Amino acid sequence: MEKQAACCIRRQITHAGASAPPQERILSKPSTDPDAPRPAGKTADAAHLTSAKRTISLEIEGLKALMASLDGPFAMAVEALGQATGRVIVTGMGKSGHIARKMAATLASTGTPAQYVHPGEASHGDLGMIATGDVILALSWSGETAELSSIISHAKRFAIPLVAMTAEANSALGAAADIALVLPRAEEACPNKLAPTTSTTMQLALGDALAIALLEQKGFSARDFSVFHPGGKLGAMLKHVHEVMHSGEELPLTGPETPMSETLLIMSQKSLGCVGIVDKAGKLVGMITDGDIRRNSSVEGLLARSAGEIMNPTPKTVSPGMLASEAVKLLNEKKITSLFVVEDGRPVGVVHIHDFLKAGVV
Image 1 (cartoon, rainbow, N blue to C red):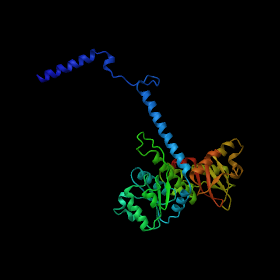
Image 2: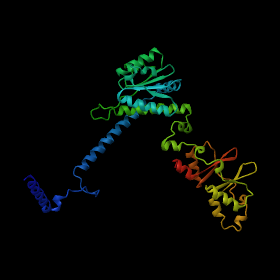
Image 3: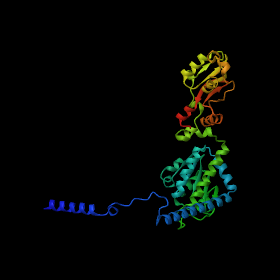
Image 4: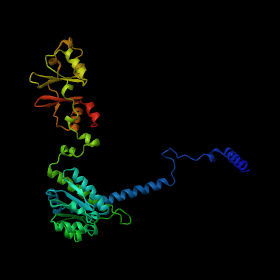
């Protein structure tokens, strides 16, 4: 009986589905027409955009106030952090802690050794991470973060310089600090005026300002930067030419007296689209590329001519220590595809645009 009832139900459902008009059986699909009516969507979109613009506007006002407030203590903080013989210890709780972690990472990657220490863990052994020679940079909007008390006491006990970043100069943190970076009061973007938004943006910007001022003070260059950023696209852009170039037996070289018939054979064997012309002292005196061959293809007796007659006597060259990104810029500016790498006038390598593509520089 149960099987008969189930079959009956299935037949009724099938019959009802078959007899129903197509528009009732098929769920409506979203319109692909951008101008199609969107009863609730447009109102919601407008509200979202208004909210976003208000948030950004309030944070911009906070940053303007921060910029106007910068004075002597900022310069003193840069000097103190720059004179650390150990590390800059960055610390903070909650949202300030998240900003502190980012500050430590930015400082470390731009030439100022830095480390984040969690205030809650400090009194459980992590105070051992803070030593003489370090400088502490402590973040607390109110300046009354209880978890920072052990770090403040440790700083005083061992005469470790303490730089505070707070909105309250007379707070426990502000009063204990050797240098206080006092953040101006600004309206939080949160409609309840509770969630740290404008305040954390200001902290982040001030941290970046410290890091860049220190970077400039140290003369930290793009080459220095590459040491700490070997991975990813950024790492590829910061590679040096010697890391990408062909060298040794791969170099296509010949003398100026070599017949073009042999020169073309060398170019074909090395598969780099060029050949360097060197004198008896081994110095680069010219270069022949595929383009030079095409431009001279109509010259009578080309194969019987010498490489010295066809070569470009003033080829563009680079040094092994040049950044790969700079070499790519030169290739693009001169509309060429290959460069010889020279030291003291002698070719030590050659790079082709394809080498930079493989390395991820382009």
